[in-house]
Amino acid sequence: MSLKLVSFVLCPFVQRAVIALEEKRVKYELEYIDLADPPTWFTEISPFGKVPLLMVGEDVLFESAVILDYLDDVYAPRLHPVDPLRRAQHKAWIEFSSGLLGEQHGLCAARSEKAYRERLESFKAGMARLTRPLDAGSFGGEEGFSMVDAAFAPLFMRHELLCRSRSELREIYPEPVGVWADRLLQRPSVSDSVVDDFADRYVDFFAAKGSWLIGQMRR
Image (cartoon, rainbow, N blue to C red):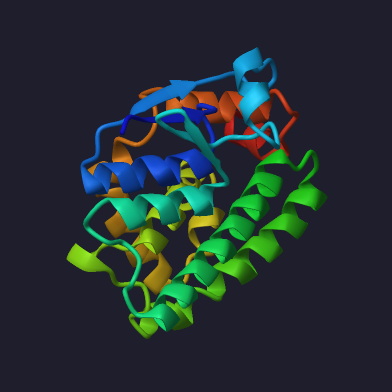
């Protein structure tokens, strides 16, 4: 059955699905829309008016975690653990990654240094929580890649982009998180999961919102 992903060009949640599809080597179509001016057909089939959407033939799935579960149920190799308890633990950490993406977005959207510093402390605390499961080897999957990897890779990609001009951001990575991030960012499924000019688009998007952080990067 044909697969079509509907996306906003900067959406990290769609990027998760792209990474999973690339890891599974599944054929799919990817269509980008402007969420500020969405086409009528999109508003008619998206209950929340958000991306991602996965169109499976004539049927529509929404919410990134649901899409990831569907892809893992249908296409090999499995990226979720087979064991029910470990699978549930992985899904919990995927949910945690969604919260961290929200923190990262807030970090970039902060309009003042004070707001940025507050967000930075919260983001740093979230990153620190990843040390324990990484040390325990909890995130492994078939062929050394799991759905948790697919979920966190967009976060790490954006963080690496920001680190290029703000070295203090690199320092908030606990060592095992930095090693994990570097490993994921070298993976073709991750590096190829965004448009070629993603970095410019990302910076321009937050610059237009009056981001203090982006303003500092551009000085």
